[in-house]
Length: 217
Image (cartoon, rainbow, N blue to C red; front, side, top):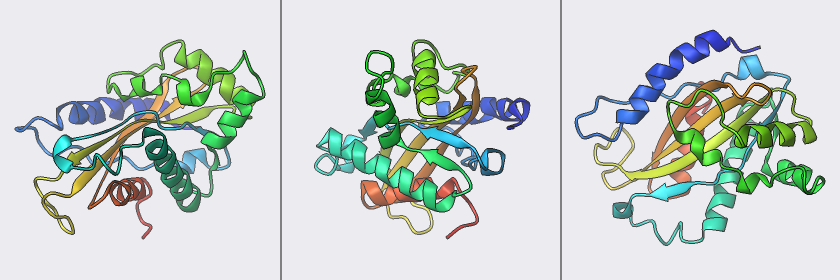
């Protein structure tokens, strides 16, 4: 069981940093909080599909991200593949399994690709609002998930202006907002923004997801 009191105590710090991270005079953002895999070990966790990807125009990545369906599909594939490889102690019930569960209960379950999961990018949300909460609870039950869902709420690409080690000015920075929600109560148990840099969207996203599991190459 995750210590929800400790996790919620850290939400304010993470949320405040994200809210001001794009202001020119803002301090450096808070470091990405690692996935609480030790607390989730042995559990089946629903991994929702991504529904929101946006990129700063100055990156000139329009061509790479032009096809929204392919962009979402490739982003989901990177997230699922890396989490299963780097956090195998958790049973990840990925987007394909959730879509299958929804198709098995037409009229009862909502297609996970059409849920309003992007609303969870709002830093101050500590409760999953309805109807998203009720949709999430129903889908999780159908997919055999008893407690938690990991929601990729938004993937934002920004141009790197302050190139750090291994990065070049003009590269892109992926900022992936992730929320772990209790599907029964709707409470947010953990939230972070994973950041990674690269010369293309997929390299930057891969770097961001790897930050979630520190200590691995």
